[in-house]
Image (cartoon, rainbow, N blue to C red; front, side):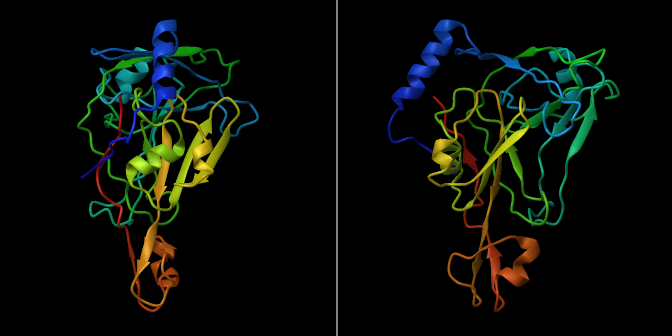
Length: 267
């Protein structure tokens, strides 16, 4: 298991947390847990990804499943909650992908069990809808410092994408920091601005990723790359399982040397 330990305490992050707590702003952290006032954005009549709110949940939370998350956050019946856990088969071999969309109003007594460390998407109706989402919601919970996350191997389409809930008291400041904690060596990291529908996708780790800040309460998408081993492909050639034959020429195989559990670092 990989456990990231920061080489020094980042003064800027420490000050930011102190200011947030002192000001009674977006997030309050204590030994007992977190309380986050998270803004939600309505969808646009023009379509696109406006109103797709990427959400991080505390790794310990009182919701348990999508039904109770909808109820306790006061979401309308036509809002949806989407799991963004695009995982592969039981062998983690890139053979399948899985995503589930639950409608708050038709979700059963219990549906869509929440997974610690996984990100979720709350999709709100347009602002003019008779039952819009609340302008903001209060998310509560605490952290489980022992939660391990393993990035799946990548295959075709969305198979291998992982949507990660970032701890509210993370030591990470940028997308690059999260990628380093995960041990990524090539791949992509992405965030979505729900107010504009704009996505930001960067190679990770990279200098560009160092300039893309995380947003409190927002999850990030991570997608690792495989690397060709053996065969005649040039050293460092990246690959995914569905294209191994064409990418790893000469009978090479697509390997994922960094496909190991990690624990997200936090204060």
